[in-house]
Image 1 (cartoon, rainbow, N blue to C red):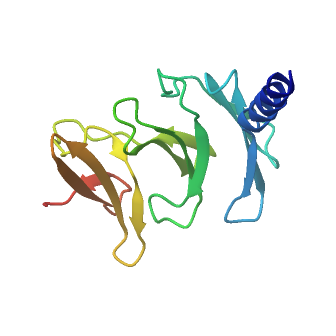
Image 2: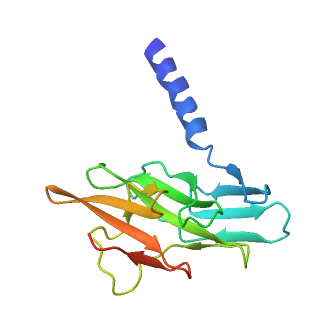
Length: 167
């Protein structure tokens, strides 16, 4: 009976921690931006406190094996504005974290998903284990293919377009 009670209490604690998916960060101009997960990351609602508009992103990549999804905040394109990503452990062997990155556009006050450009063939088909090289302004993505680890090095041109650097 004691073991059942402990399991029940720990299960309830896990649910409450797992469900805490809202986060707030501050823009370049110190304005609060709130991200809210809807229905366990089926959608993400974005509110910028000084704007009346609410952005709703409906196509969030989630784990098909119920691995936790969470937000990460960073300046992924090195423009001085904070961006965000929705992250989860990969559904295969669980050896890397998958990132779905959303870049802030100061002209529209909206976040747009960062896409791998058409007809560009990186080693990793998605953004994985993302690291930022702030000194060189590079976004590094590492994944496993077979028995090897691969790293793609990305940069942004003067128009903000994603470019794959030669490995």
